[in-house]
Image 1 (cartoon, rainbow, N blue to C red):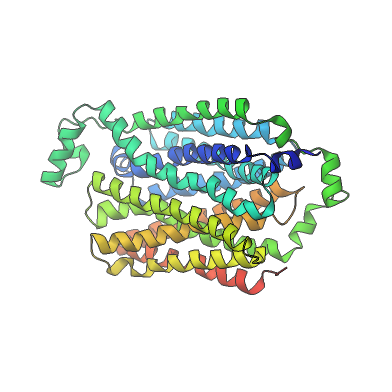
Image 2 (image 1 turned 30 degrees about the vertical axis):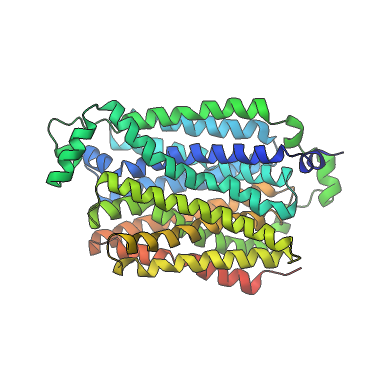
Length: 433
């Protein structure tokens, strides 16, 4: 019995998916701490919109490089060792961010964070492919990917709690801000460096995950011997065969489309709510918490829908494309955002975008797992790298538009269209069984 056969039959495979979700939660907590503290950091370092966009671009460029490097590594070295190495690297980068004293150190830490955080997806996708049969992979991937939204839900609450811990007068200062409408830094004598403490604490959580990984995941599930690869896919086919497959290029369009929407909102939504819509830091945290909770529901719903349709004798590709289409349609609510008033209407519009933006990811991951067992890591790595290179080029343009127009709404209205456009390509060109 080969390792994959053993894992496919064990209920313990769902614990592995939950552990992948935990890694993704920690990954996103390290990443989103910057977004949640963006206004304080901009004040502390006196950053412009363009400089802030450079931080996001540096992260994306590093993420692209890290995705390729990790993708190559996990096709050659057991993910049992590659995965914890990536977690340790991004955790260290997160901790060091909390010691940054100038913009260039902050930029270097952000670059290192992107380089190592990219490894979460080639490793995680390779793992779900190893432990789950095809019809369960969309659901397994939704569990894995839902860690992004859970991390985004947990991060604002964690950041607020850690800020209160770093500054016992935090509650009083927030009350003053709410009454006066001023910024935190304007409340005298408010310390300006309390933003560093959350980075140091959140960055330390990766050590816990590394211990759980080594203690609870059997080694035999994660190591696919060369003889198994040969029996499965033949005599070591070149990666060029994957590049010649039209599905690879369809997935390239899809991954760029869904990442433009998801990461565009991740980067700009907190600033949009505070600087343009007038939300307080607490109000922003509460709304973004709801946003990411519904995003999580979107991931689980679309992953579960695919499995439900397959069990009702739908073809796998038909079920996946249907789920992807529903998710993409929900992101079209982005067109309404500029005209929705504060309160329930704006909340509902943002929740629809969240549901769809995250709901597209499980299907994308499942589609990548159909291309190649031997080159799964490289497929995930190169596609992820392409998406983040695109993001690195797009962020400065978005920053330029925001600075020139004085509004975030044009950017937010446009980026939500990208998943629907990508879905049209999948629906038209993806081969059916």
